[in-house]
Image (tube, rainbow, N blue to C red):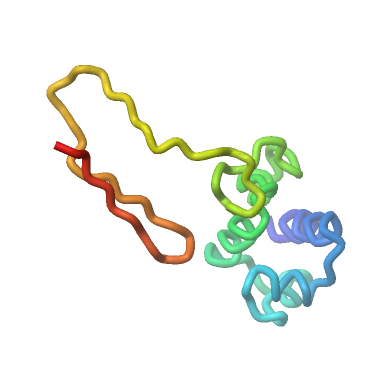
Amino acid sequence: MNDSFVARLKTIIGHYELSPSTFADKIGVQRSSVSHLLNGRNRPSLDFVMKVIKTFPEVNLYWLLNGKGGFPDPTPKENANPKTSTSTPSNKITLADTEKRPTKIVVFYNDGTFESFEPKK
C-alpha cells in the first residue's frame, strides 16, 4: 500500500502545484511527516489522511487509500470546505406525519464549534 499511496500523494501535491513543505503547512502537519511519507520511511496515519481529505475536498478518500475511484473527485464532499462549496444550505426540514418527531438537531462544524436547534412548539 505504501508505494501506491506515495504515488497518489505525489499526484495530489503536483495537482495543486505545491511543494511538499507547502503541502504540509496547508494540511497542518510537520514538514518532516510529509518528507518521511514521500521517502517511504513512514506509513500514513488516519489523522494525516483525514487532514488531506478535509483540506482538499476534491480528494476521494477511497482513491487516496486504495486507488479506487478518481482524482480529482467530480463530486466533492458537501460542506467539506465552506469556502469552495457552491451549495446553499436549507434551514427547512419537512417531515411526514409520523409519531416520531425530532426534539433537537445539533450541527457540528469542522472548527470544533456546534449549534443546537430545537423545533418551535
